[in-house]
Image (cartoon, rainbow, N blue to C red; front, side):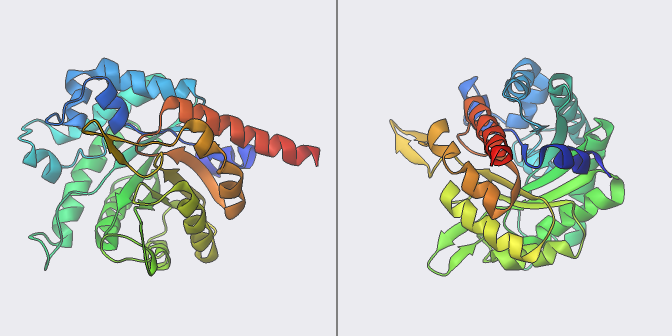
Amino acid sequence: MNKLQRLLKKKKVLVADGAWGTELIKRGLAVSDVPEVWNLENPFFVKEIAKSYRDADADIILTNTFGANRLKLNRTGFKGDVKEINRIGVELSKEEAGSSLVFASIGPTGELLKPLGNFNEADFIEVFTQQVKGLVEGKADGVIIETMSDVKEALCALEAVKKNSSLLVGVSFSFNKGHKGFATMMGLSVEQAVKAVLEKKPDIIGANCGSVTIEDMIDITRIMKKFTSLPLWIKSNAGLPLIKDKKTIYPQTPEEITSFIPDLIEAGAKIIGGCCGTTPEHIKKIREKVDQYFENSRRK
C-alpha cells in the first residue's frame, strides 16, 4: 500500500491545495513575469503559499512548477537550468508541507503535436523527462499532470514520469461545457479521456480548471466514476471568471464552493481541492466541510 492509499484508507476523502497563479499575483507577480522563475528569485513568496495551504490543513500540496518545461520556459526567454527550477520548486513546497504530501505540478507545453504543430511525441516525452528528473531530485511524493486538453500530450507526460521515476502519478484534464456535453479544447469527451489514460496505469484520474462550475464538476465526477475505480482528483475554479475593473476575478466565495462538497463526495471524488481563484480560505472551508460530512455520516 502506497502513501496515498494509506492516507485514503485513513481519511476516505483527501483535501488538496488551491490556486497558485492567483496567489502569486496577489504577491506581486506581473503579467510579464514567469511564475516558475519565482522559485529562484522570490522563494519566500513561493514558500508562503505552500505554508498557507498547509495551515489550511490540506493533505496534498502542489509545487510552483506547472509551466516549468523547456518549451514553455524558452518562449519566455528563460536561459537557466530547467532541472534546477523544478528541483527547487519541489524543495520549497516540501520545506513548508509538514506531514502533507507534495505532488509536483506538470502542465501542458503550450505547443501542439504534429500535424497541428511542429513537435512529435518523442519531442514531448524528452521535454517532460527533463522536467521529471528535476522533480525527482527534489524528492516529490507524487506528480499531478494537470490542465490537459490533448490526450496524446497527457500520455507523453505520463510516460516520462513512469520511465524516469517510481512516483505516484495522476492525470487531470480540463473540460469545457458545450451543447454536446463536456469536452476538452481538443474535443476529447470525459469518457474518452478516462479510457485513453487508463491503459497507461496512472494512480489517479481527475479534472481541474476549465470553463465549468463546481456543479459541472459533480457531473464530470459521476461520468468518470462509471469508467474507473481509481481515486478521482477534482479541483474546480472559484466560479466562471469575470472581468471587473480590467482584472479577471473568480467570484465564488468559500461558502458557495463548499455548499457543493457533499454532492461532490457522493459523486465519487476522493481528492478535492481548488483551481483558479481559490484561496487558502477556500481550502480551509473545504477541509471543514469534508470533516463535517464524515462526522455526520458516523452519527447516522
